[in-house]
Length: 114
Image (cartoon, rainbow, N blue to C red; front, side, top):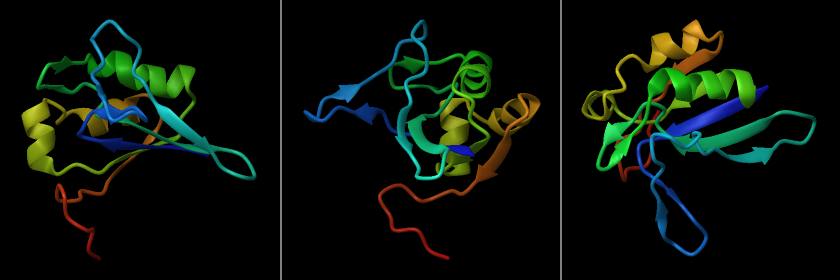
């Protein structure tokens, strides 16, 4: 099983510089392989449209399902952030591609609570 952990922020390189994807680039996913098969990936929100990032959600989500072969997409951003980024259709777009969507919102810069 491959799981994508999606965050609202940009992806940072090891030298600390933020990498802002452009709309014509494939969605970048950093992935860690898990012993026994599968993996966990992290990326900016597919379809994000905010702060200089203007992604195309159907294209991003299709890449996750068809090219990268993810099974589950877990969004960690709050609903209000999803609204601000234009990502309110993420769940239905993910499910239309045959993946499972889990929304586990974590308040920005806070420790998750049960």
